Amino acid sequence: MPARTGQQYMKGLSEHPAEVWIRGERVDDVTTHSALANGVRSMAALYDLQHNPATKEAMTFESPSSGEPVGLSFIIPTTVEDLERRRVMMTHWAWESCGMMARTPDFLNSAVSGWAGSSEYFTANRPEFQDNVLRYHEHIRENDLTLTHTLVNLQRSRNPSVFDKIEDQIALTVMKETDAGIVVRGSRILATLGPISDEIAVYPTRTHLLGEDAKRQAFSFALPCATPGMRFMCRESLDLGRSNFDHPLGSRFEEMDALVLFDDVLVPWERVFLLGDVEMCNNYSAATQPTAHTGHQVVNRTVVKTEFLLGLTSLMAETLGSTKVPHVQERIGEIVVYLETLKACVRAAEADAKPNQWGVMCPDQGPLTAARNLFSRTMYPRMAEIVQLLGSSSLMALPAEADFDTPIAAELEKYLGTETTGARDRVRLFHLAWDVACSAFGGRQILYERIFGGDPVRNAMLLYEGYDKRNAMDRVQRFLEREG
Ligand SMILES: Cc1cc2nc3c(=O)[nH]c(=O)nc-3n(C[C@H](O)[C@H](O)[C@H](O)COP(=O)(O)OP(=O)(O)OC[C@H]3O[C@@H](n4cnc5c(N)ncnc54)[C@H](O)[C@@H]3O)c2cc1C
Image 1 (cartoon, rainbow, N blue to C red):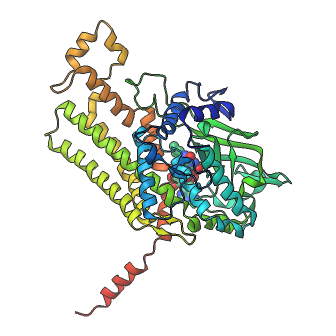
Image 2: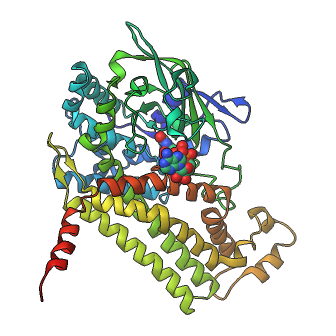
Image 3: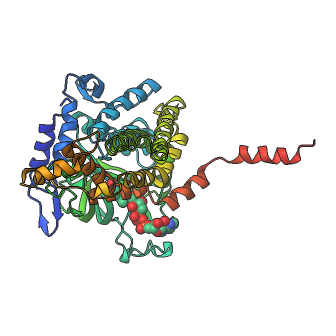
């Protein structure tokens, strides 16, 4: 099947319903449920871009097996031009949600494509796993399936010494192997997009390395979300059922995060990619570099999101008549610096990309890691703060759309207009600022950007451990020893 349309994506979700729970209710159909339907529609719009004459060529490439146009994020990049082409495609998708939907399918498509290009790695675990990876990549590419992923176990305690006491486990664990496959039980936190995805990938993460005894927690596999025994437990929806005017982001871009509970779920053998080998699970990320590809998507999306915030804050200043105020200029200038830094990191990652040992062109992780660290720790929380500081009490002067249809509308028009902008336009703009920086939707965005790539402490530890500091240290040593 060539690249899907939005309608085909929605049909797939309705015809293969996963077990999704929200606020005490089991969801019948995620495409019509009020908590999720608008997010589904936004996802469908992404698939439609693959058929829009203006974007189709940028969004697809010729399938190596069917010859049909398929989604470009399924490409196994072998040249820098492939990466640049993929970035253009990712940019189209990121702008559809102004960077607010982070787990658009390009995130995982590029990771699985990276595995496929490096599929030989998996043979050392079991020879048939290489074929499993290759066939899975072809399956999701040819059917244009939407993936979620879940990597981190729920924990009862953060004391590492308790983590492999199997009878107390709540971590996802292999309970038995059968002729049909492996049976897994346990829980994972989280799967963003899970309730509105077709497939779930479950694999190890470099941020939570497995202890040497954790053989039964060492695996990588993928399943349809509608597999029996698997449940998605949603947080409350951030789509409050308001209009696009009142709630411009939450009413459109609810991508939903869910816990995933596995109650003796059968994973067929052909869907298993790694099993029982702690070392292979712990090394797989360094060897196959999926984070180079997901990082390319992430940092490119943060460019889009930052440019969106630059536009938003600039319009806010123009509307309030504060464009000549020095500290307003300074704050917006700070966002310009962030934007240019992020753009430079994406381009540097492409320019310094190198093929891995299997010929997959991997963006350079150095600038991507730097950008991800800066964005999650500093840039995004600070930009949300700038929106609050610039918006100030205008973020409270927010009559709803319906208020402009009441007897007090004339007063609203009179008092809420500014020198540059009419009342309705000012209020609509500041509803957007509210949704970015103050609403529940905005709060979740900040939490997401801070944490989705692992907790900052462990990430900093990984960076310290993994970064080659020898050359820098040698230079200092040579300077200390310099005479004169
Ligand atoms: C909005 C959102 C969406 C997400 N989406 C996904 C997703 O789609 N897929 C997915 O797999 N994951 C997802 N995650 C989960 C994310 O990967 C984890 O939250 C992250 O890895 C941190 O794990 P944790 O929440 O269990 O942290 P915790 O272990 O609960 O950490 C809490 C705090 O304790 C500290 N801490 C605890 N133990 C240690 C330790 N041993 N060493 C150092 N510090 C420690 C941490 O620094 C942190 O500040 C998402 C998270 C969020 C918030």
